Length: 133
Image (cartoon, rainbow, N blue to C red; front, side, top):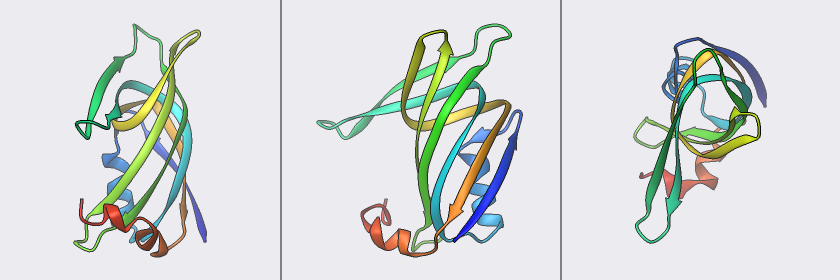
């Protein structure tokens, strides 16, 4: 097992930045946890009838920051070489205003502190239902 700390800089897009890092560094599979700040975020909640995400978008107000309270998820290299990335995020858009769901996209501001915990290829075996998606 390898723990990789990663500071994601301002203006970066999630999950694109993380997926690129995984590819460039030859990671195989693992999980991630982190905190930080965002300028905007798009999340989804799965509608089980339609099997589609009901999407909500949030944008910071003025000089405030959307506080990323927690991001957690997993990743692995699929059989076709692409990265399967699945993360959920919880964030605050103001005092006592908290939301969360499946992370679709986000723009980092000022930064996100992430830990990638590389566990190896057994992740693909455990989550084989996502290998063909």
